[in-house]
Amino acid sequence: MYFDELPLTDNILDALWDMHFDECTPVQEAAIPVILQGRDVIACAQTGTGKTAAYILPLLNNLSTDNHDPNRINAVIMAPTRELAQQIDQQMEGFSFYSPFSSVAVYGGSDGNVWDVQKHGLTRGADVVIATPGRLLSHMNVYKVDFSAVKYFILDEADRMLDMGFFDDILKIVSQLPKQRQTIMFSATMPIELRKLAKGFMTNLVEINIAVSRPPETISQQAVICYDNQKLPMVKHLLEGRHLKKVLLFVGKKLNVRDIYTALRKNGYEARQMHSDLSQPEREQVMLDFRNGKVDVLVATDIVARGIDVDDIPLVINYDVPRDVEDYVHRIGRTARAENSGEAVTLVNEKDQLFFSRIEKFLNKHIERILVPVELGETPQFNPSEKQKTKRRYRHNGKKKKNHQARSHKFSRQ
Image (cartoon, rainbow, N blue to C red; front, side, top):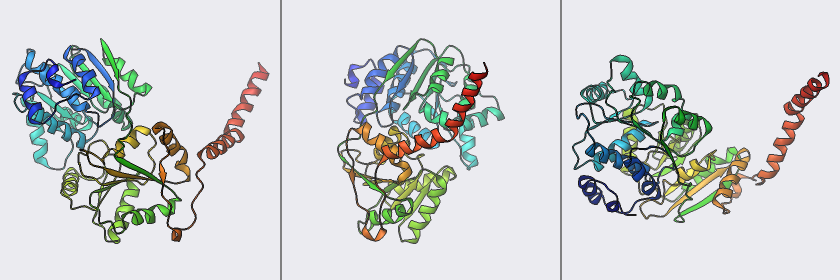
């Protein structure tokens, strides 16, 4: 389906034309008509499928065609991280280029001027507020924010907000919104807790499920089966002599981010780190340097996987295996964008073999193995099924066995 086949206003279609948006993605084709009808929507779709446009375009269209007060807040979009809030705000600016709507991005930062700009937007009534839950609540706790005119409430990456502990914050914000409104929720996964949350404040609900797409064939996927102490030397081996810029290295824990970042700097690489402990100005400077090619390796937690929009990343390294298939797809999807090719290498230690085997099963392919250099020593066998059997035997012979005995005693006394 093409965008000009949808009942969107000329102003929106003109902006899409300027931005070279022509054909809808599957989630846009499925979601936009339903949102235009005013129905509550819960959509399961991964990052990179065009979901931001899937809710911003019908939101702008509905604001253009309905009766609303231009001097009050009409829509609230919630996002889990500063980076995603900024990205949504940037897309909002592009899609609304020919439309008379204002937006304000509300997220944490150490600059006092940022707070004042956000307060101005919240009190003067920006048409669309794009906010992280914690920061929006901070404003609400200091002064009254008038949400009485809000007609649209959108949750982006709702599962991530749940994982980050924003459940109670979201409920507090929802309690201040009018009951008569359109609610839209986008999420990469749909855990039971999220369904309960959705049913608590959504009516006339339509569910849209877009299957997690597999990575494009333009990504060369490889894996290294190794011990934990071989990971850092292997990273240096992968980078050696290639003179690459904009390499993205994903790490599971931010404490490890600092260690790897320090080690790479000591070895002469122009490395940067990205994690939740950095201030907003620090993050913005790191991303600016990364986009401008001033960084050899960006060592980051998953905070970057769902917000970075850089087209020419040649290599993604998974220092740790992601626990979810969706996270793996998100991470390696940062390379091979905009018709470019790219590489993705995953370092798999013994404890992560089962998680990696699940990724291969989902992809329905065997990911090519890279051998560790001889000087780094021997490597473990790849045998995830055997490790799983060992895990089950341990459970049976340990706590599970005790619980079984306890139940047997209980039943014998009855």
